[in-house]
Every structure is written in C-alpha cells, then in structure tokens.
Length: 375
Ligand SMILES: Nc1ncnc2c1ncn2[C@@H]1O[C@H](COP(=O)(O)OP(=O)(O)OP(=O)(O)O)[C@@H](O)[C@H]1O
Ligand SMILES: [Mg+2]
Image (cartoon, rainbow, N blue to C red; front, side, top):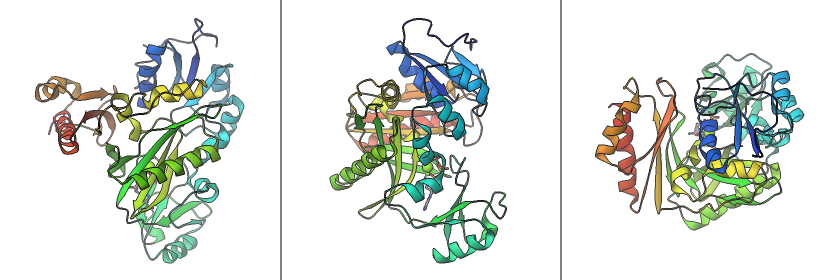
C-alpha cells in the first residue's frame, strides 16, 4: 500500500519522476519505471486507486492543491497523466509538458484557434443565441463541446439547437460548436518529444469509439502510405509548434484523402496501449525517457498487426476471475487489468493480440473481451 513520502530527495541515486494523477496511465507508467529503476511518485486521488495500489511512493492529494503540489514536487521532474491541473500550478512546478504546451490539450477552443493544423469547421459561442446561429451556419446540426474538462465523450454532444446541449449551460460561458464530420475512420498518431528536441513517432493507428469512448485500436491503421506520411507530418509539426515534452497523441478524422485534427492529449493515451505488447518501446517507457531527457527508443511494431480492445465494465463481479477462461481459449492474449471496480462503461482493463492476419487478431481480441465481460 501507499507509503508516505518524506522529503523530496530520492531514496537512492535513481532518477525521480513525479506524476500528477492516480489512474491507469500512472499505473502503467510504473510498469515501465520498474525495470529502469526509476523512482516514480504519484499524486493520487485515493490510496487504493489504480495507481496507488501499484506505486509505493504515492501521496494522496488533489490536482488543484497548490501548496501540497509545490512541496511534493521539490526540485524533481514532474509530469501528468491527465489535463485537469490548473495552469498557475503548472507554471510554478515547471511541468513536462509545460503549461504553455498543455493549454492546447486542456482547452479545445485554444487548440482550434491557435493550432496551425487542418481542423473541422468551428465556431465559438458565448450565448444561447450564438449557439443557435453557429448551428445554423454549420448546416443545422453540430457537435457541441465544453472547451475544458471533457473526457471519454463527456462534454461532447450532437446538437440541432441550444436546447439540445445536455449539460448545464449559462449565457456567458464559452462553448465550441463544430461541423459534424462524416468521417471514414478515426485515427491517432502518437509521437514522443524529448526535452532537448528529439522526436519519434509510432505508426498511425485506427481507433473506434463506443458511446464516445475509445473501444478498439488497430495498429497500424489500414490506410495507404500517403495518408500515413501525412499524419506523421501533421503530428510532427504540432509537436514542434507546441513544444510538448513527453508523449503527444493527435486524434484525427479521415475524410477521403484528408485528415482533420480532432483533439490533442499530452501524455500516454488509450490509442497507444497496444505499444506495451506490440512495439519495441512502449508509450509509457518513451514518456519517461522523454521527460527525463534520455535518448528515445525504437518505435517499430513487433508484429504485422496488433489489436487492442478495452474492457468497458463487465457483467462479472470481478473479471480477474476470468483470466483462466481467456487463456484456456487463447493463451496468446495479453491482458491488462487496472485494479478498478466494475462500473458500466468504465475503462477497467484492456487486451492486446498481435499476429500476421488482421481478421484473426481482431477476432481473438474481441473473444477475450467477451469472456472478461461475462457475456
Ligand atoms: N466534429 C466531430 N464530428 C463527428 N464526430 C465527432 C466530432 N467531434 C467528436 N466526435 C466524436 O466524439 C468522440 C469524442 O470526442 P472528443 O475526442 O472531442 O472528446 P473527449 O471526450 O475529450 O474524448 P477523449 O476521451 O478522447 O478525451 C470522438 O472520438 C468522435 O467519435
Ligand atoms: Mg478524443
């Protein structure tokens, strides 16, 4: 269980990384830190949460507790596993990525207005009347988004009028309205940028969402080389423009031969979980290397295809009881459980299967998830 960290110095000569956030991303960062002997410390929401269970040097605290965070960080390298840290705190602690970079991932209106990249058509509205006129300008239907604090499809809705906005909205508040893109596919390009500038990208992946939540990821995305190259170019430009340090995920829509940027994340990302088992260097190890300013690792895939599927809730009380059943059926499945309690549509784990034939790899991953779901 979590130990109280006393002082800020390392207990040895090990590099120290402090991570703000106690979810599965910090937990999987610990999986990468262990073989490297890196001392990972997490600021967690709960001692027995996903990361608290796995990281002995965890401190319980809120991501907006300025006094706690500045003391906890000391002079150590600090990174994040989510975007919900107030900007002034990020500036005080010299985070990697920096506050200036993270703005693009924290605020979708900042991203749309300041990022030099191809975007869907969009408007900013600050009143119900402006929401309605923006929807009209977009052709009668739009995607409404809260600029900040959205995740897993929360804060995203299809709207035909201001009354359709499903969260509390008061005149004066900023809201993003954008065209409802009829995409052929959703893709993500993950790239890591080291503090001193070196960058390495993984292959483009295809992601499929269920109820706005990432569900299935196929690596590499089944698209032609020209699109793969264009996606890498867009992400590289964004990494340079924002000065991100660590892993950057660029979510994009494919429309014919065009790519439109949907949103950015500046941390390991769900669409990169396949790299743990399917790439030479995982996104979690690469993130640690990048924030510590160490040379980046090889991002090549280890197999022709890898498919990752999320376990979103389960009918089983504890799906870990079904590990045996999955492996009786298919001993090659890689299973990752996050130590989280089952709740409907909650991300509680994922599986990855790699191999030569996409259809069979996909079928095997979905069969494993069916068993873990208790269906
Ligand atoms: N303009 C759009 N047109 C069509 N579909 C969209 C659009 N914007 C978002 N979506 C759909 O909604 C999903 C969630 O949207 P988005 O990624 O912006 O929100 P989020 O909740 O912040 O997501 P995340 O969990 O990735 O942080 C997208 O993956 C996509 O399927
Ligand atoms: Mg998204």
